[in-house]
Length: 511
Image 1 (tube, rainbow, N blue to C red):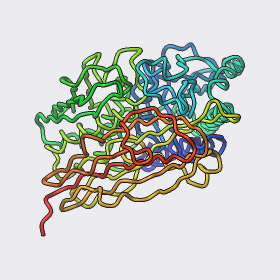
Image 2: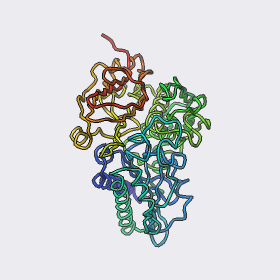
Image 3: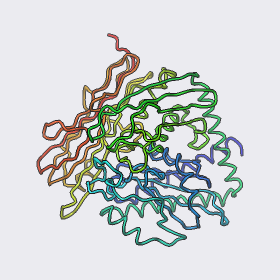
Image 4: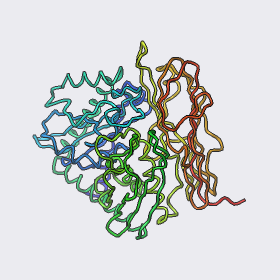
């Protein structure tokens, strides 16, 4: 296979992932999937090693890449199977993210797997939106260990009914959309294998990984060897624990970039704990950002990374720990501390801190005549960097979703968006300023239960090289400041205002 043939092969595989995502988006019922694009699609070889993905959600894809080997090797696969899971300690991230995995067979031999993961607004938690201020995994909703929804083409109707019951009005449509996305992936892969042959297909996967490994090795060789450390804090866990440290030590050698989280706070009662797969996803994301844009997404890229974290810590929590916000909030801080450490080695490449939170808001009313659940994240400022200013009102790092368009939001739910604007003056100043945060106000038309899981309300996004920090975020209900993580009941006419953090500035500003 020539270099040109390899490049075409890589793009054909990426196109399959993109088409899977397009089918999922167009067929889904929920605003979370069809509007915010909170989903990801990827391809894996017969052993569960990643060899292609679309540019979807980093925390989804990195955690799948880390955990797929363990998942696929525990099943005796048959043609027509479809496995689902959401268990964070068996390959998932947090319970709202449901993963669908299908094997591709050619001449009765498994050649690989197609997979997609999508966020469901309801997964059975008593709290609307299924992102509660929880203190155990069971409080967060229905736990799905790796389970066959379809066995050799036969659908498990009882399991489908159970998922529909806990998932609400859009669940069956979203599940059908995820099944359809995998079916399209299988069809396109089968067509590709039929055209080029199984042996050439498998040789192509080997060459993708070898190519990715060469790029990763070259990138690693450009990072100065040495030891680099950084630490930062989580504001709180929603259960009374505050200022929780995440510490990162990076050892760069010619053969490995070793990331160790020794010294990180122990796991806590609240739900900011991370399973190790989410921590790995954050590390994969940062390393991927150092690579050239043309680098294929494959296992070969990550063979030079080593990740260790104390068991029972915030970034390697033990089973049954609450994790709903670990996936969305702690993952962002893990990125911050890895970037902070790498800045010492690569000051000309690493940006100041972004907003460092996804500003999670979930809401709904399970007692309404028409029960509803809603979930979204809100963008903020990204950090200034050596080449320019940060971007305002943008999703960054571990989230790659869109906002929910106001027209769609207001047509589906009894809430109005009173204002949606850039939070002027929230950016960190510097030679290159950070980006400004966002203001989003919600005006409620009926009794609604709201949950907020937010960060960087106390510890602001830091600047670099003399740049100032961005402004912390703040949440209000009718002008009263709220805790960063809280559940509340609002009445018709009340206004919830979210002001998200700005990004840190880079470099000392001169007049």
